[in-house]
Image (cartoon, rainbow, N blue to C red; front, side, top):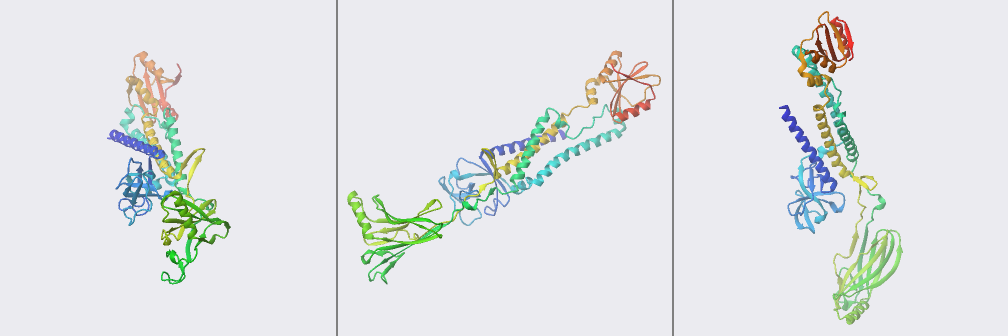
Length: 518
């Protein structure tokens, strides 16, 4: 069962490595992304800490769970499409009461959910933390040492077994941990896998502990701006008003109007300059701009001012244009636009009014207040930059995890290959090449009266055996391999193994030793 099980594990390891490599390629190319869920907006489909892989699709529709950048920033939402089309989808979290504020278009969607791993984000963050990376490297080294210890114990048990001690044709020499990984042709592959492991560990140590983005400098923040409008007009005493002044947001009836309409505006925001104008337009397409107030500079973060609208003069300008063009002259759209130039940009809200022969009224009931919310520059992604090449922390996290897994699997596969193809010890080489000449026997001393000649290599002993037509006696004791060819008066011997056991066995024979070098 060991053989099939080992092959099955090797196949599974290869599949996992291939999947990790494919995922890494997709992530690097932008065709896929990894999202770790937060909050409860998608319960019970997803829970906090789940890992979801999203991939770009050809078209999205109702029912798809998609990821997109909230407000175009770096925060990612993973919610379900419930309506809309490619120009703008309506999206909602399954556990939310209301729909999302954003309506991302097809091009703004990162991808559709294709793979869900419950609590995968929590596990991934734990596995790629610096302590776990160090522990994985330590376990890899410790595993090799443990396997070596087990092999040594098995060899020790075989030596204590009388049958294996007498009949065994050789005991493999002890090898140091990972010796096979440093032999050709595995050396280059081992170096590459080790470098990938170190690079992935270093990348993970940088990417996971810190945030995925850095806060934008305070200087890049855009201060909030707002403009409040109001208007008043003197009117004659009549049943139209309770007094002699018409005020916003009430309409101004022209039959009782006793003067110009005063438009007041109050600005709050960065200091700068302000210019006020009126933009006139009619349904026929005619339009014109009438200056109301020259440019004025201000400081202090606020500015208030007032301009007068002479309705008769404005209407006369419109009538002259209508006579020249033949286009309709009513109703007239009047937009009072204070343009503020501050911090290098223009802020130009408008008070929109509609003028007819009977009255002047607000074209938009909500138009008395305009505001531009304070915004800050989007946080910059934390990234490693080398020349024109840049890698963000958000992308480095899954890449480091995939690289670490692939490197560990590659080292495991190389270790297995090195065990299968490790260099053969001398006893095994002798047994494979000259096995037909060997005769396993019990250890025994050389018969008295025979001269013992120690040859320097086994090939010489094999040639002597073939020359005299003799077999080679072989036994193993205390880690020493002894090979003996008995001639009529001479015993030719070759030994391999540890030096100390060899000396002790020579002392046991009590015979004269001669060393021969052919």
